[in-house]
Length: 238
Image (cartoon, rainbow, N blue to C red; front, top):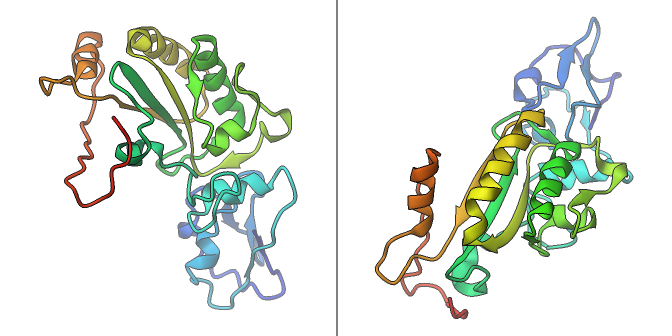
């Protein structure tokens, strides 16, 4: 994203629209900090500029990852899904990705309004990989890994910043305490905010095994559920 200096009147109307606070008011024109800008397009799509001075130009690799991860109107070429590019946890009744006795986990970076660099995602992904998780193949972050077995993200994108991104993985429920402990430790090395979402099948009696584990570990949580009530088309044996 850039500002046409010939058109900008330095009114400052755009500054509060940038979620990364990457726009500042210069003496004559507004200026975008290109290192902090994630090419989300909020300033452009808001049409707040009275003289239409914002210009979006498709960036070359590796900066191009900023736009596809940060602009919810853009589809990821790997998954054909907009936004963060993944939907596995939302459609488990169709995909059957998460079976009883297993945990699906999403580590979500950069929200709200902080942003994240892939260097931090790489640190967390490598910690998860060393615990033997299976990374979701239909996830654009997995597509940026040199090797999903190591979790290491490609060097040329490590310093790229995005509005938010999600690492998704799967592992046996017996590893839950170990993995949560490892994430707590690596969080001390991360220069952004991240949260964890977990999904598991309820036991036949209707109880949720992860709830007991979270309580025992003293980890606060918010319960969110998605139940198929016959309005969709469940195809998976979950």
